[in-house]
Amino acid sequence: MVSSTSFAAILVTFCWLQFLAGSYCTTFEVSNKCSYSVWLGAAGTPPLSVTGLTLQPGDSVIIPVPLGWSGKLWGRTLCYVDETGKFSCVTGDCGSSTVECAGGNASPPVTVVEFSMNGPGGLDLVDVSVVEGFNLPVMVEAEGSGKGEWIGCVGNLNEACPAELKVTIGGDDVACRTACQAFGNPQFCCITAETCNSSIYHDFFKTACPRARLYAYQPLSTTFPSLSAHYVITFCSAPISTSSKMNSIKASTSVAKRVMTVVGVVISILGLIGCTMREISMQLRVASGHWMCFHAFPTQNHAYSAPKQSNPLRAVARQRHQKHVVLQYVLSLTRLNNILIISPFTHKIFSTLFSFLLLLYNPKIDKSIFTMTKPVVDDDYLKEIEKARRELRALISKKNCAPLMLRLAIEEVKAKLRKVTYADLYQLAGVVAVEVTGGPTIEFVPGRKDSDEPPEEGRLPDPNQGASHLRLIFNRMGLDDKDIVVLSGAHTLGEAHKNRSDFEGQWTKDTLKFDNSYFVELLKGESFKLPTDNALLTDKKFRKLLEHYAQDEDAFFKDYAASHKKLSELGCNLENHLRLPKVVPAKLKLPQGIIGIVVASAVILGYLWKKRNKQEKR
Image 1 (tube, rainbow, N blue to C red):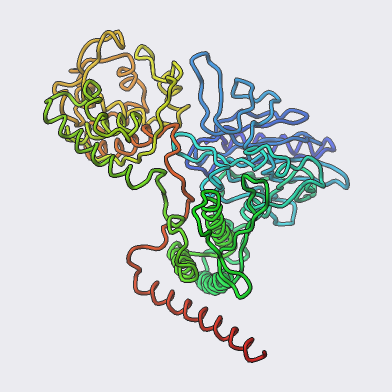
Image 2: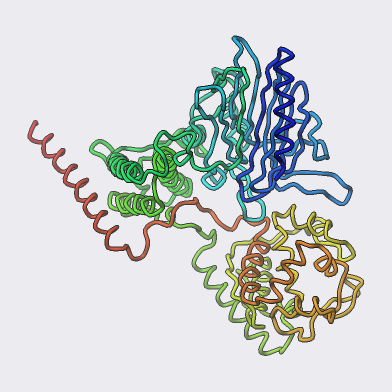
């Protein structure tokens, strides 16, 4: 823990002396409840005495705040030190090149907590801002103010963020940009108070973060009395519905939980019925520059009309709109979960019901919007990939060659399958090589494009370097310590060549078998070692993982398959998908199916009854 009892005692003494001197003491208690490290960033006047701290998961720190302080706090993630000693962060970087921000501001997208202390009327002006985008869930509570309020953006927007706004590193969603940052279009930028127009992107942030500041000209969210206020700032806070401080219904009261869950079920079902009966539309600017409206559901006055001839723009617009409809549902359900106590099972029921109703009203809707991933290649290309897989296996058997030497004969396969790109073929060869030599099955997603330009130099680790260099190279690709160690296990295949790395030799006794022998022999000192291999032995965190994989080959295979897939997809936009619960399962469980039929029947009967009444009135 960053904070300690002795430090807290000193701080209390400091505040008491401040009080005797005639001034009031405000403190910030900053906690990290994320599952990863957060580096605290701060900027303001006068400067805070404690900044640039690294908060490990579960850590907290108490910071004394000068009287009349005005400034901002934020969390930085995925930070590292490069070979020159420069400190940088993937999100929230303040550009100072050191852990201390030294007055530098946060680089967007970033979630920011803004303070203006001891303002007019003796009030503190406080807000949590997503004006510059989002990178971390943040909640601010004021203890000692007597108001019992909280502000912030507590949901994980990175996962629900629209694809065009996402910031993705190594396959992980690490931040969510604003539409202004993503497109640079004045239509989405609040240059003046009069130009702050609503859009689906604005609605996304507004729905997901109702207690946060959304645009520059929006008034500060909340005021608190300055007198001895103690602010608790939490990154990745627990859900508000279960907070003992913020929820008047005690989480320990089982009766209250049941009541709230029942209320949640009723509200959600009513909301789903209303959503299906309502005409939902979205305006989308197409290449012609005109505004076109696409309707998702048939109603009495309008009907969705698919174009008679194939039109790519309309097809894209239709699919985007369908995703927009589902996104609105997910946001509504997310907001409901922040208010009520909803179990994962209940959430799954809601998702299934929504999917059932949506398909009922529009059977021709693109069902791919309900899948977790949607490959960007067509069926013919997928068939070519399967042929390539078989050809590669046959090539290994025919040539009796080392798997890593497939590059010498890759043209033989490429000549038969001209549609498959070199990029996909090389990656597929690696997957097949691991499988054929006894390794794990690795998921392969095709869709890579070939390039006429080689990648920039310096992307691969230098075999002469140590642990810090390995972390630098891998961290900036979004890979962590586990990825570094588990991917090193692939040295069980093949050997080093002097003309490529200035080293010559094989890492394991059997270079054609994929197993955990690299780790076993490295620990015994029996294998050939590069300086980077030695780093796995000498670094405490690396060695712990090394010993784990040496003892448990199954764990190595499982983690290797995941890391190999992550590495093979770096820099590739292989998937066009919306992160949703896995809905429309192949087989609905009986309770969910019954509920779906009942609700769907009620919707149909209500629609027919309403239509019949209108006809009778005529």
